[in-house]
Amino acid sequence: MATTAIIKDFLQQFPSITIALALLVFLLLKKLQKSSPRNPSLPVVPGLPLIGNLLQLKDKKPHQTFTRWAEVYGPIYSIKTGASTVVVLNTTDVAKEAMVTRFPSISTRKLSNALKILTSDKCMVATSDYNEFHKTTKRYILSGFLGANAQKRFRSHRDTMIKNMVRTLHSYTKDKPLQAFNFRNVFENELFGLALKQTLGKDLESPVYVEELGTTLSREEIFEVLVLDPLMGAIDVDWRDFFPYLRWVPNKSLQMKIERMFNRRKAVMKALVGQEKKRIASGEVLNSYVDFLSSEGKTSSEEELNMLIWEPIIETSDTTLVTTEWAMYELAKNKSHQDQLYQEIESVCGSDKVTEENISQLP
Ligand SMILES: *[C@@H]1O[C@H](CO)[C@@H](O)[C@H](O)[C@H]1NC(C)=O
Ligand SMILES: *[C@@H]1O[C@H](CO)[C@@H](O)[C@H](O)[C@H]1NC(C)=O
Ligand SMILES: *[C@@H]1O[C@H](CO)[C@@H](O)[C@H](O)[C@H]1NC(C)=O
Ligand SMILES: *[C@@H]1O[C@H](CO)[C@@H](O)[C@H](O)[C@H]1NC(C)=O
Image 1 (spheres, rainbow, N blue to C red):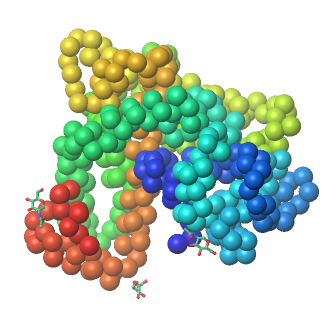
Image 2 (spheres, helix red, strand yellow):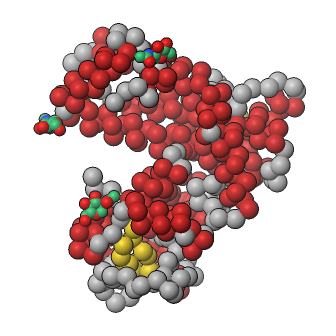
Image 3 (cartoon, rainbow, N blue to C red):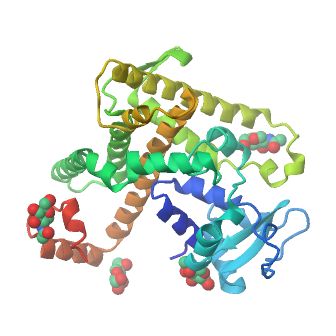
């Protein structure tokens, strides 16, 4: 499989981080060799003066280029993206060594300007440096969202999501059996709903008035502001990021675009979380991340709280969507794989529905 191990490793540590973020964070990872001079020198992929290997990475599928280089230079090598040196880790072993065993040596992340703005200066578990903030928020995410107990509390939301998806798929195959079908619409809608239930306690049933924007936004518009726009912003790589000494060269249009995304996201989160804070203050408790964080009561500012709640929303809505869609695409291409999957499920569950308890039994 043509993927770099570091991304896989990263995804295993934070199953819900968005691929786009992971890729960028990875591309811009801080120099590795500098901080530990004892390490042997690395193979260097030859590039051009000044711009280094940037031209070789121009396509939007850098993982393929990385894999080709790994065939020549081995599992760890260094490249230059403009003025920055980047170390590429291609196997799980070297990724683990760098990011787990020796992790203090890459305890800070270098982000693109756009990501710096969109992550509120690293105010996310996925992009944070390894510091007190990272420790605390990772603990919140584990006990309030991703850990086994939190996942148990959210079980009914997941069951409802699966039920809805299956119902939609069944009715579609019944009504329009021969028409092409876009899985994304179903997954996207349901995963966003799951994200909202888990973070805020409920899905959005009606449009939301966003005071700071002076307007009312529909659920789709909110999805755009919270998920689609920031992802577009995150992959919008600016050449200034590769030449820090040219950062002073202004690019008003880009800057304004990213700042507009940031402000709209902030305004919408404020409106959404504001509603839930009122609910919590009135004594109504729901099973959600915002309820959990409020009961912990330790997050320092309103903005930080809103960022902590936004993070799982974008990660649930995008990463899981892309992974699911990719798996369905692979399955759709190969009838014998579909048959095999069907046999496997039938051999464990018979004609019963598959449940989460059954997953460990499946081959
Ligand atoms: C690393 O690079 C090689 C190419 O030499 C590739 O076959 C392999 O799948 C890559 N990834 C991992 C995780 O080893
Ligand atoms: C500014 O950013 C926009 C959007 O990314 C880009 O199309 C444009 O070329 C940039 N301008 C300069 C001078 O870099
Ligand atoms: C499906 O997968 C099987 C086994 O991996 C392979 O032999 C077969 O050629 C594939 N069929 C298609 C249509 O790709
Ligand atoms: C599958 O899970 C259900 C509970 O969700 C359980 O009743 C059933 O026995 C399980 N089947 C197998 C084969 O483990």
